[in-house]
Image 1 (tube, rainbow, N blue to C red):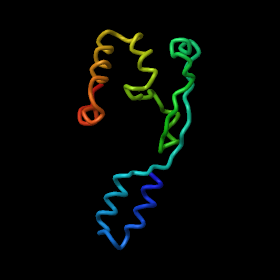
Image 2 (image 1 turned 90 degrees about the horizontal axis):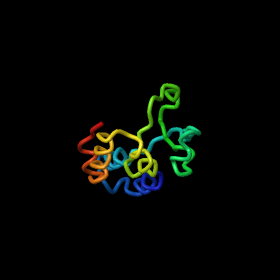
Image 3 (image 1 turned 45 degrees about the vertical axis):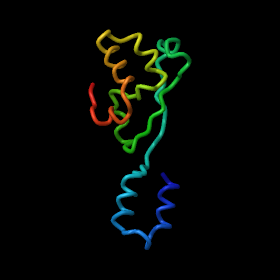
Image 4 (image 1 turned 90 degrees about the vertical axis):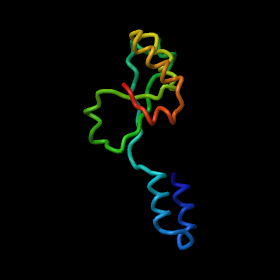
Length: 110
């Protein structure tokens, strides 16, 4: 994001300011905190050596209220989690995996 924003500066006075503003908003640079949630010891074997899930938040003050972590369907943990959930949830995950990222963005379920 930083490189894209820097390159936009070279277009100032050559492009309409509204277009540059739209591009800056579309790039959407965020400042925040990146850290890892450790996987519980009893799950480590099932998680094939994955020891933590790395997350990013723009609101570090809300970290103590975390109740869940959403992961992308392509995340390696999904392969292991799908074996441990209900048949209904497993079907839903498999259906999600068979859609494109664009389709997922348009229709969020679950």
